[in-house]
Image (cartoon, rainbow, N blue to C red; front, side, top):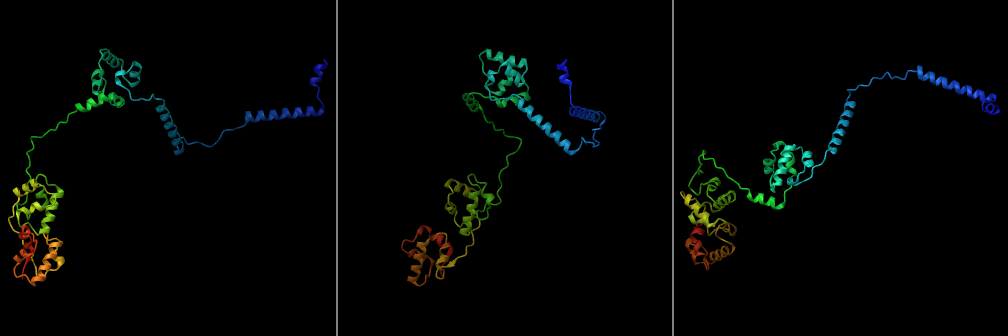
Length: 296
């Protein structure tokens, strides 16, 4: 009896503490039961912030689903198992066709053969064929077996290239490009050299175009002729300056120097043919040189 009395015997201060504790508990209980904790604020579920949040959640779900999908690594389609074929989306019939083909000790060497054997759809073939990995010797064999076919439309008549003129001194770059072996560069080069000469005066001057092969030059001469000879501005050999004489396409520095020394020696040339008296004068170029000179 004394034991129970010791546990339930309190002094005045302890009884007051217990009393206040009970009062506080009752007050909290009343607040919880009768208190209104609801909020008057309405949340707009269609606001831009809420929609953006849902969109972000959806994108994270999509990424997670993609990550959970089994990844496909390059593989040899000859060794597809039942489990592998099911993962790729093949039906049981398609897998069985492949296994039966392999049991006959035959091998598939291209995606076209794979479709012929399994009879899978084009859409599925386009999905899985990029992962096909054949041995190097098979790839090399397939590349060597490829043939290129060139189709010609016989319904369209062959259009012959038309030139604007047959006069070599009036022909345009497009005219020269009709000759086999002459493209953009050579056609422009011919015109540039023709301008330097002030026009072709001799047929064989076409052979002087730098880089133009003899066979191609002969093709030019077979199409174009010198119909009208050019009018060349001639300069007086007795009054021409050293710099002006060097502009002659057939006179280099050494020959120009010899001509001036000869002119100083004879004082004045009476006839242009006197140039032949110059030591080591290139007689093979005489008819071209004198195209641009006159003795007055």
